Amino acid sequence: MYLIAGLGNPGKQYEMTRHNIGFHTIDYIAEQAGINIKKLKFKGLYGEGRIAGEKVYLIKPQTYMNLSGECVGEFAAFYKIPPENIIVINDDISLETGRIRVRAKGSAGGHNGLKSIIAHLGSDAFLRVKMGVGANKRGDLADYVLGRFPKEEIEIMEKAIINADAAVEKIIKNGVEAAMNKYNGK
Image 1 (cartoon, helix red, strand yellow):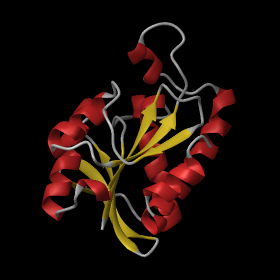
Image 2 (cartoon, helix red, strand yellow; image 1 turned 60 degrees about the vertical axis):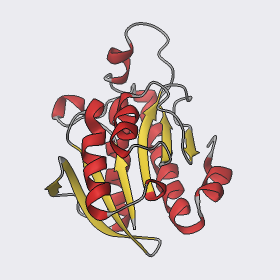
Image 3 (cartoon, helix red, strand yellow; image 1 turned 30 degrees about the vertical axis):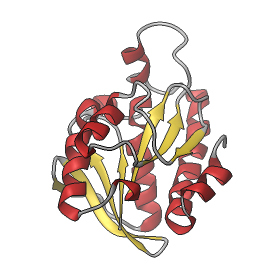
Image 4 (cartoon, helix red, strand yellow; image 1 turned 90 degrees about the horizontal axis):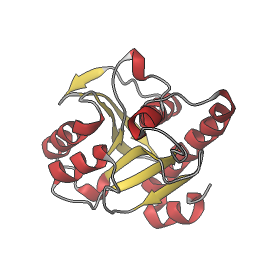
C-alpha cells in the first residue's frame, strides 16, 4: 500500500501557482488511474484506488503547505504506512522549470512542506518526486512560489506532470532506483 501526497495550498487564489504543482500532479495521476479525490479525512482531500496493481491513497493536504505533515502523518499512522511507502510530490526552486528529480530520502532543503512532513513522520526516509519550478531570480521567495506560471512555461510543466505520473508508477512497479535512473533530469 502506498500513500501519494501532492503538496499545495487550498483555495482558488492558489490555483496554477508554482507551489501547487503537487496538487496538479495528484489531479493528473487520479485522472489517469480513475481515482476520485473527493473524500475528506485527516485534514486532506483523498481518494483510493490502484496503481501498478498496488492499493494507493492519493491525498492533497488542506492544511496549507507549511502544515502538510499534519495530514500526511495522520494518514500514515492510521493506515500503518511506513515512510518508504510514502511518495511526496512537491515544487522545487533548485530545479530548472519542468525537470523532475526522484529521491529515496533526504533533508527538507528549505521546503516548509517537507519540513512539516519530516517532523510529523519522525523520519526523512520517504520518497519524493520533486518538480522543478525554476529559480527565483529576483524578489521575494514567497511571492515567487505563490506566483503563477507564465504562459511559456505551462506546456513545459504539463510535460513534467506526465513524467512525474510515470515516475510514480515506476516507483511502485520497479522501485525508487529504477525511477531515479529513468526520470531524474527529465
